[in-house]
Image (tube, rainbow, N blue to C red; front, top):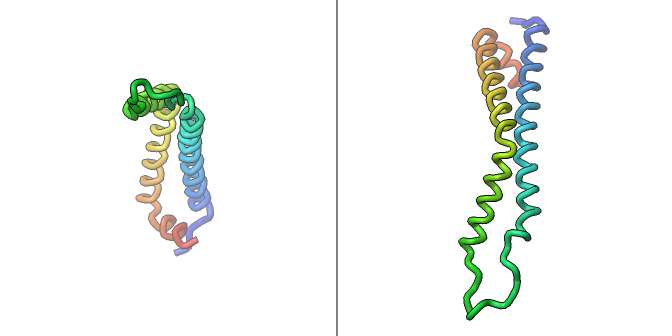
Length: 111
C-alpha cells in the first residue's frame, strides 16, 4: 500500500516539533547544571584552619547545594511545566495520528 506524501510529511513535522520541544527542556536542564557547577566553589567551606581540630561538615555543603538547586529549579519551573505539558500534548497527538495512520509509523521506522 502506497501512502500519499501528505500524511507522511505531516507526521514528520509532528515528530520534529516534538524533538524541538524536548531539546528546549534539555537546554533548560543543561543551563541549571552549568549554573550549579559554577556555584560549587562558592558553596564549599572556606579553606581556613580547622577550629579545634574539627573537619568541615559535609552535610552543610549538601544542604547549601540542595537549597541552591531548589532555588534555580524554581526559577525555571513555570517554563519547564509549560514545555512538559506541550510535550505531553505532542505525544498524544502523535499517538492518535499513529492509531489513524499506522502504516506511517512503520514507514518512518524503516527510514
